[in-house]
Amino acid sequence: MSEVLLEVTRGPLVENIHRGDIAVVGRDGKLKYYKGDPYKVAYLRSSLKPIQALNVFLSGAVEKYNFEDDEIALMCSSHYGEDMHRAVIDKIFNKIGLNESNLLCKGAYSINEKYKNFQLENHIKLTPANSDCSGKHCGMLASCLAKGYDIENYNSIDNPLQQDLKKLIAHICEIDESKIIIGTDGCGVPVHGMPLYNAALAFSKFTFTDDLQHELKSACDKIFDSMNENPEMVAGSGGFCTELIKHTNGKLIGKIGADGVYCLAVKGMDVGIAIKIEDGNMNRAVPPVVMRCLEELNVLTTSEMEALKNFRHEHLKNSLGETIGKVNAVFHLNEV
Image (tube, rainbow, N blue to C red; front, side, top):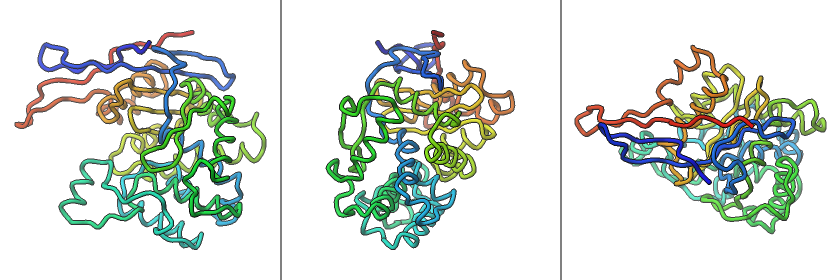
């Protein structure tokens, strides 16, 4: 059963609550901490992108096209469609010999409200490269080319690329492939549903890779390092994923997913964390919940907490700019 993770106050009254579920799993496969139901089944949405990006390595695409760290980080991203992101998309296309017309995701306004307003005010023409998922789609196209698969329907679950991805996800998440629930994500590709425990277990493998087969170890290490070296590619200017990775000195990666999903890999503790906000609230609810988890686990130093303090609580303001309420994390993790 989901539990209350956040309270939203307006003056003295708790006006809204957000419930959710959390799983914290060690690389040994043991559940370490939880809140609510750590086996809650959820679509992992874009949180799964770093796992999916492993296939770009295993397919031979990284070696064939000599992808660089910023390109790899973008393949793991839900980016804002800023100029810096579009420039890296162009780099990828130049390497693989394709163009935006090959992307099977539609042009979309930025998922960042501030940059979306900039796009609207400046009448920026949207193309598929603006999609926050275009980096993932580029990785899928590159993998198709490396394997000799058809690129016309790379977004279909029947395409061998998607079958490869499903097998890989089942392997990394240690779940029977037949138990993965397949839906369709907002960008048109298959989305994978499974217990939060399995998602957290998968992310724990980024924290300590010595037990993995060599090719997989190398891929996990490279993805972790690429995201840390290029945090601006993972989200964008001021984005939570970007700021979290930027200010934690190489100790973690974090990836948001639509409808209130978030997954992290935390070195030192060598744990993976998977979070699902029950009502799907992503922007208001996710950052304070993630920050509370990291506080509870004593992951962050005082200086790191200070750098990320704006994500710990959201202050509600009225149209006059006056603070009238607050979003507070109100839970404590249960230790197993």
